[in-house]
Length: 104
Image (tube, rainbow, N blue to C red; front, side, top):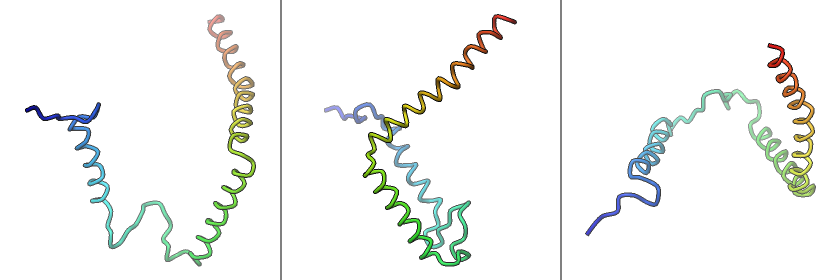
């Protein structure tokens, strides 16, 4: 009887590393006093409830706007504008680069 030591393309070392990463992250968090470096101290915020409500309302309005406009339209026009910008920016750099290379 042969035991299988891997799951698909995953080796035992990869599986152990993935579970170990969770353990390292959980060991780095103080559950009784959770703090994230770089965030403002919530006790210094004047009214955290109003701030959270404003952020929640903004996210809801943004998601409703995206759903009304249509995500496919946003992506279609976004990629179209990115293509125009690429033509306006990349093509001149390519021509200047070729000119400078031939000049040197």
